[in-house]
View 1 (cartoon, helix red, strand yellow):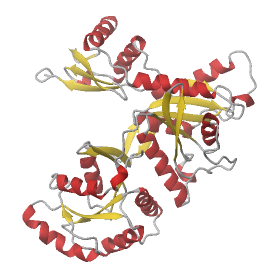
View 2: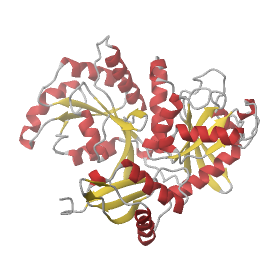
View 3: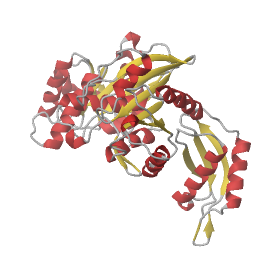
View 4: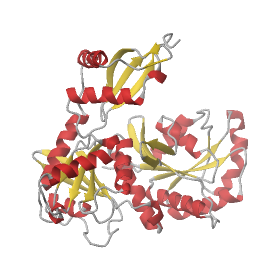
Length: 441
């Protein structure tokens, strides 16, 4: 069962992104950099009192604007409202009620959704009623006064959010492996789902963009449960014009966030394009498993080592995700389609690997003996201790003397040594660097 979704909307500069970061428990910039990839982060998942839900952050809504960027932000917010089960309508308690707030309120009334009116930037309980008074006339009931920056009244807000979700939103936990089929339009994503399930579960058409929504399909193979998530093709932003397709892309990115493994399908004839690299970056940045599927392989003229050379080229162009295995298939002819599921099964296992602390430290000690840690101005990096602190993806904590001495190239070297010792094919592994107090000087 998909998690319920909360959308945060309002006019610009009322504190939506600050609240988003507070709700998900981390500081997550709207745009983050991954080698070769820039990604808009608007979706994350969180929980309150054991109940998990998704959160969508949106740009400020300017209802009356001809500006292209502001219009796109408004469209993004409108599609987020359509996805949401509950909507937070955020206003600014210091500015009071504005015409722009009233215009946003009119948009919200048309949705028919549960709307929670939140008055932000109220720093003390004594000011809560005064700051909220003007907003009663918007017609969304009693406002909740908060300070997102100071975490004031966030607990009460979370209680209200969870109470607002439909009663059946928090169903039983789905233990199946969730696989999102991602890629550009018309590479065979829907055809793959139909071929694996042996039914016409989703519409297939040579017209790019046929799939507008994400479609979940339960599927059993070799006594293991899977959920296949077919997604809309992700085009370049410059080619995304109508609001329906923007809605599809928002859902596709949300599908990446809630899946375990991403299957990136590419067209064998086209090869790996810049857009494919960006899509792979979405999965990598989100810490998901990743499998590259080269479809329409039957249309390629073969020579000696054609498959090997193609795979090498793909991995060379996806250096940030070179751990991703490559499968060659023809969905139309049903060639090696179940190899995809076998690989996904192995990737799911790899994402759950736990390494004992003793074994892990032995690997790192051997690695540092073979290649000395970097130094700078007479100071050398020291690694005191390493432990695994998480899975899905595997997460390792390093106790070191100085983060600034941990060069990217040496971190990559340590990652490679861990990968040589354990089968982490198909999954990223993440490191965190913790300076030991008193050792940096």
